Amino acid sequence: MKKKNRWQPLPGQPLTEMDEKVMYWERKGKEVPTRDLIRTPEEIEGIRRSGVVNTGVLDEVARHIHAGMSTLEIDRICHDYCTSHGAIPACLGYEGYPKSVCTSINEVVCHGIPKAEDVLMEGDIVNVDFTTILDGYYSDASRMFIIGKTSPEKEQLVRVAKECLEIGMEAAKPYGFVGDIGHAIEKHCKKYHYGVVRDLCGHGVGLKFHDKPDVAHYGRRGQGMLLVPGMVFTIEPMINMGTWRVFIDEGDPFGWEVISEDELPSAQWEHTVVMTEHGVEVLTY
Image (cartoon, rainbow, N blue to C red):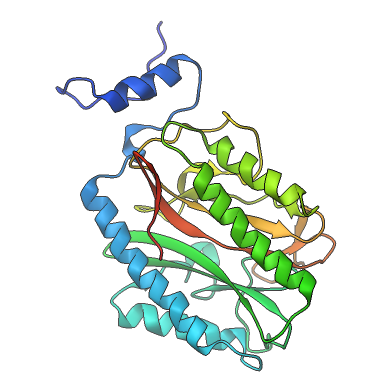
């Protein structure tokens, strides 16, 4: 029996240029998206509106974050801004996650749980990662914040992690591949002898919190899923000052907090993007 293609042209419609390009790569044995991963213009506008709120949340954090405040205070800021704008914090209650935002300090790579006892100190670096649901549409982004004055080593890590996000977005091209993104990020990191976390990745987003494709931040060109206009996903490289290896904090009763194996600092920046005919457009500015 002939294998059925995963890509399906629209019923009753002539083949489009997109159909022909995707089916070409599928015949070449490449992984291609299913059509249900291609967002309509109306869906993209919904995700864009969600992204406006998500950006507003992180802007509000930027206005208030300072040494001496707890990460629990950051959680309250995020929750209150989100809900006052008619949206829902996607993290709250997701698979048992107890708070509205992830706050990851220094060696915590991601999924740091806000706590009253986690007080920001001069020199800390902290990632604030928030996901918004507005009218059923999801957007997801994170930023790094430097508390006061920190070491040159931490400053460089934060800067390079942001460069990795920008380089990854530049590498994402229509009818290119997810592996092109990871290859570009990993190449940049190697210049600084940093580790690119492999255990976690970017992901499709928009109608769900997590969807296809999985966006690894390391890899080879031409590997992974084909990138097609209309796909919406995150790029969110996690860059460690030392090894790329990580572990789950045994002291975390919820089993969420991810820490660098050598407990050296880690940094991450994230955007939600939509693939267009010309490259990616950021939806979380």
